Length: 148
Image 1 (spheres, helix red, strand yellow):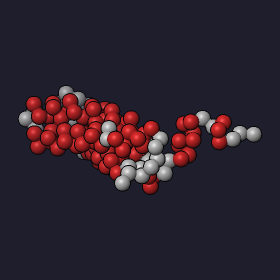
Image 2: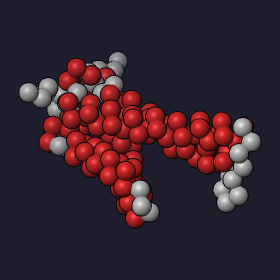
Image 3: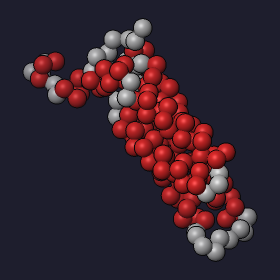
């Protein structure tokens, strides 16, 4: 007969997850990541609509780019929603997304698009700060005490 002690640590942590004790910092990072994922999926939809309307790219494939944005944006969206639901595994996806968006923001800035690059960089930095906050690290370690 299996007891609570016999269950692996990971299973017990997943069972113990309670969204009501998810730190505010994780919820904010989840919201930022969710918005970033939604933007990626929206870009994919726009590219498909443009392709169906007859717009043809000479240098890139609109449909191929749409698939890329759909997969990456969808994955980031899932990670953000997971954080909002209090699932620890979403933190990894959110961290990678924020780290990868920083060079994208730099590229946009050096390309003359500060109107997009500055908000993107600020969102990515804010997400990273939230993900590495003391409350978020305690939550990740399994300390499920609510933050006050």
